[in-house]
Image (cartoon, rainbow, N blue to C red):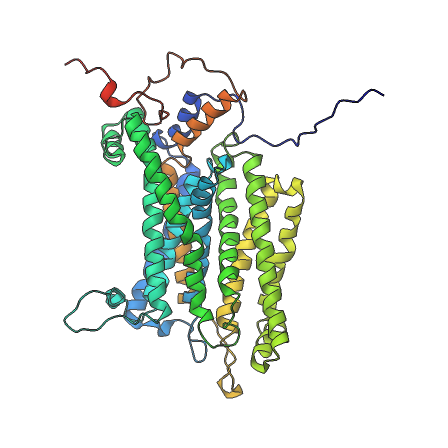
Length: 493
C-alpha cells in the first residue's frame, strides 16, 4: 500500500503589516501626519469639543475651591460618590497601554507594534485624569503635599495604614514609569521628525527632544537596554496598581466591599476597560488617517481575544461575589446583593450585566472580531458597563446601612457631572494634541517590522535602499546594525 503524503493545513492569519511597504513609505506615511502644515477640519472639531470639556472642568474645579465638596451629591451614608467612581474608572482605562507596551514586548508579540504608542499615550492621559479626583476629594486640595512623607518641623507623618496613601504612591509610581517608558520609545522618532522637518522651530523642538540621537549602534544598544528595563519595571505595575486601588474597598468591613476576590477582579476589569478604550480610539483613527495597512485585522482580532478573555474573568468575579454572599450565610452580605438585584439601583446593575457580559459574547465569532464597526460599538458598551460597575460597587454598597434609619439615596449634582465630563474633555484634548504633534505609531519599530518581513519573504525584497531614501545613520529610525559613530570617517570641515 502506498502511503499518502501528509497534508498540513495552515490556519490563515492576517499579516501584522500589509505587504508592499518599504522603509521610506512607512516613514513618510507616519511622519507626514505630524509634519504636514495643514490641520484638518475634523481635527479642529474634535479638539474644540475636548477644549469645551476642559473649560467645564476648570469651572467645576473653581467653584469647588470656592464652595467646597458640599456642591457634590455626597451625603450620609454615601460619603463616596462620583469622585471615587471616576477615579477607579480612569485608572482602569490606563492599564491596557502598559499591558500592550510592556508585557507584550517582553513576550515578543509583534502585533503590539502598531497600537502600542497611542495606547501608552492613553495610559498617561487617563492617569492624569484619575489623579485629579483623590486630590479634589480631600476637601482641602491645597494641602495635598501632606500625602508626601517629607521631614517637617511639626513631626507629623502621613498615615501609612490609610489606602489613600497607598493610592498616592501607586498612582505616582505608575505615572512616572509610564511617562519614562513612553518618552524612551519616542526618542528615535523625535530624531526622524527632526531630520524630516522643514520649519526651523520644529527642527529645534524635535532636536531637543531627540537628545542628540544619531542612530549609531551604540545609541541603539543603550536604547534597547533601557527600553527593556523600563518594560520590566512597568510589568508589575499592571498588577500592583489596580490591586492597591481595590484595597480601598477590600480592607474595609463594609458589606459588598470586604471581598478577597477584589484584587484579581479589579485587575481583570482594568484590562477589560482598557482594551475597550483602545478600540474606541484606534478604530476611528484607523479610518480617519487611512492606517488600515498598519492596524490590520490581525490587531483587531488579537485585541478582541484579550478583551474577551478578561471579560470572562470579570464575569467570573460577578458570579463569585454573588455565590459567596449566599454561601456565607451572612445576613448583611446577602442583603447587599439582594439590594443590587432588586433595589432602587437594580436597573443600573442589570445594565452593567448586559454591557459587560451579554453583549461582549459576540466576540466569540471571528467575523465580529474583524468587523471594525461591531468592535467599536462593543467597546463603547463595555466602557459604559465598566463605569456602571464602579458606580454599583461604590454607591450601592453604601446607600443602605445596617440601620434602616441610616438609609439614603445618592443623586449626582450638576457639578458631579461637570467634573466627570470635564475629565473626558481633558482626555480628548490631550489625545488630539498628541495626534497632531507626535507620531501615533512608532516609526522605528515599524521600520524594524518591515525589515523582518522582507527577510522572511513576506514583502518586497530590498537588496539596497533606493537612491531617494535617506542614507544610513539619518532620520533616527535606522536599524541597530548601522555603523557606530566612532567608526565613521570624520566629516570634512
